[in-house]
Each structure stands twice: as structure tokens, then as C-alpha cells.
Image (cartoon, rainbow, N blue to C red):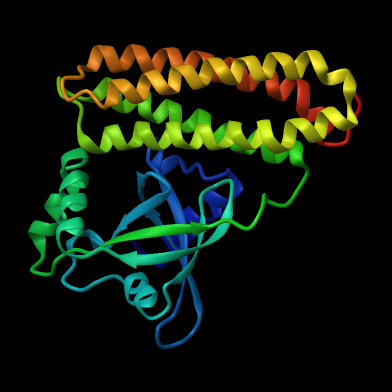
Amino acid sequence: MTNDFNQQIIDEFRANAGQVGAFEGARLLLLTTTGARTGARRTTPLGYLPDGDRMLVIASAMGAPTHPAWYHNLLAHPRVTVEDGVFTYEADAVVLEGEERDRLFDRAVEADPGWGAYQARTSRVIPVVALHPIHDGPPAGPMGEVLRKIHGSFRRELALIRKEVAASGPGIGAQLRVNCLSLCQGLHHHHMGEDTMMFPSLEARHPELAPAMKRLREEHEVVARLLARLQELLADDGLDRDTLVAGVDELTKEVEAHLDYEEEQLIPILNGGVR
């Protein structure tokens, strides 16, 4: 991609909480590296693959004979900056080696044969890099708007997974399973943080929220049961698409209703307004 085209993507990504029209339905992040020779900071838009509490990026350069500049940069300076549309945070980049690299590249190819086409164009072994986030607190800004953005990222990921499940064949690919499990992990951690930190703090300052908090906690329990059920399904090698579709649809319905209610009840207060 040309620098001008990259800059257009970067600008749109930052202006629209990580959504870029030309890449609708894709998982995209912005990776900022430090130049190996110049020391200058350089930002590159990249597709990524969920992998639990880390993300994978692939240095394909569309099958070019040499590695992309961002890859050379992170070899020299593994501490990078990641923007995911909601959070901006530091991450440690680790180049995967041997069996792990091969297994995860094969998983990527299974999900999108385009990666295999890029490898076929070049004699170099295309690197796979794991980004390990280092979170240092919530994003800046009114907490209600931060919550809205976080919820938006969950809604977007649920929509992507529903689309991926619908497009899958009779079998469920390894990367799709990982996408679902990564979502489960993310929702679990988000709700755990609310239950242990945000909710008690709000209750102490706003006792009138007690009925809403009771409902939100009950909804967390419902979502937790659905997440546990989905994880059980994903552990079944014989899982079929229709069963997974039903599980994801039920989870999506409950999560979206929960997020809508939580935003209605909490965002005005988190933003400092009056209910």
C-alpha cells in the first residue's frame, strides 16, 4: 500500500473508533514502531488475528521478496504502540519461531487462503508476530464515553463472529474457534472488572442505582452461563455450524440487550450528568 493510502486508512481509523469503510468486516489495528535506523516513529495499518490475550500480525507484505519495514523496526525495537479503535497501549512484539509459527500460520491460511497465496509468491518464510499488550489504565475522556466505545468493540466483534460462523463450512475452523474463545475471554474480563471495581464504586456514590445494579449483576450471570456453554461447544471436535450459530445468536441477543440497558442507566452518571 502506498503511504498516501496508508495515511487515509490511519485518519479514518482514528476518526471512526477503528472502523474503515474500505475494510469493513476486517479486524484492523494501527501498529506504531520505532525506525531501526532513523529512530523515527512510523504507523502502519495491519490486519490481525485474535489469539486469546494477544494478537497476531503477519509480515506478508503481500508476498513481496523482502520483509516490510515495520517488521525490521520491531526486530530492533520490540516495544511497540497499538491502537485498536478503543484503546491505545504499548505492547511487546515477539516473533514466533518453529512449530508455533508454522501452526499459527497454517491456522491463518485455513481461515483466509490469501495468506497462503502471499507465501507462494515469495521464497522468504513470512513471519508471524505476537503482540502482547501492556495495559496501563483506561483511555482518557469521560468514562461514559469510554464505556460506550468498549461496548461498541464488543458489538462489532459479535457481528464479525456471526458473519464468520454463517460463512463457515460444515466444519468449524481452528481460527474461528479461537475468535469465539477470545471474545468469551474479553467479555468475562470486562464483566469481572465491572463487578469488582466500577459497580461497587458507583453504588457507594449513587445508592439510587441499587435496582439497576441488581439487574446488571443478574444479567452478568446469564451471560456467564452462555459464555461457559459456548466454550463447552467449542471444545467439541464434532461441533457443527448450526449449533454454533444458535449459541452465538443467543449470546449476541443477551449481550446486546445487556449493553443497551447498562448504557441507558450508567452513561449519564459516568459522564457527570443528571439522570
